[in-house]
Image (tube, helix red, strand yellow):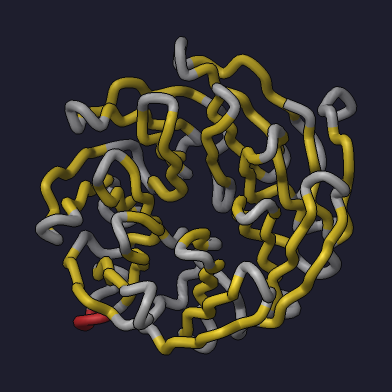
Length: 290
């Protein structure tokens, strides 16, 4: 940890968690006080704190001129206007109680795993950003929590089924099922792949979107709950409690840097030329020189 190039430790009192990059800002959710903080990446200061629903969860969606926050306890979706920092709409949605997941944005829609149609987080709900209403429900494997939009598709990880499914947004149908290691959850896309963090053994599965096959399985050595994964700046970044930053070279599929120590690190993102990590324990967001 002593050699990790942390430029700033930005105070976000409570339990800073999910991170989002967009509209010239870093966004962080805070379940302990039901809010979203907006950080200026240049000054590393909180410039707004916005009240949302109870227990913001399932990540932060960035797009359609808004920031989208699923709230697990009151089962709503908050829409924040990126210009005014105001919640402009709150929509009821059947979100699962399991809050470790991610909302997806793209293909003219918002994608969220729900319990609709009586499933155990086995419904991928497609939501219109203009109306806030569900326009399609796609059945996916149970205990699915993460949706990522990339390569003209929606990728959904099923922690219960140990698979990643690919959904075609033109037809709203599952077109591929890709088996990975046990307990896959957090997912990111870029650098020629869809990258999945498997919580069972702390590996990362690299899926080739051209073949729908696992092209590599990378031993990162970060098993356990939580954690996160992001792509940016020519690298793949993984966070985990006690191992806040691991760096993978996507050209070689190898871990080339790893920093161990501390407790409480969870979400990780790359944006504005820096790596950002949320620290639950100390109520901070770290700005790190890559």
